[in-house]
Image (cartoon, rainbow, N blue to C red; front, side, top):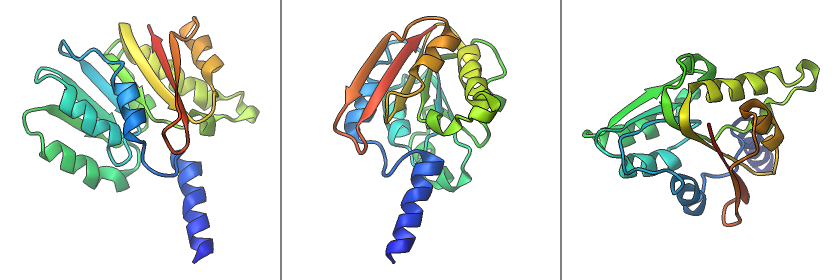
Length: 188
């Protein structure tokens, strides 16, 4: 029994970068950085069971659009339930790698990412996939748009700054989350 719990916990951390869903404190910290007073094109990356999705849908205007990119189809039932519960909102689920979705330049006003960037580091390839993902996010973000990312450790901040060519706009700390998290905010 303990071995199965350990294996599931290890898989969650390794594959998803989390132990349990994000807390309301983390969700409100990140989503609170978005100006919903106008129509937005939003991309959520790594939705999981929809902790951020639920809040994005509830706050976005009827003229806004939310694209959800979640590579793991096992989370589809949760996301599909949220989509069905809000028929007046324009929400689309994409089960693909985010690099395949972000081919069009300057498509999104907001990119909110729950990707465990630390898991994409690979010294043998000089972090090629990590940089491919960050470059794709910068490419898909409109001029003046905002990229929001959380991490459990103050990792990959310099990688994001290098790709965006500037210092991070803001780094906040959310202690009331399991694990406590750093929220990065970067405008283009």
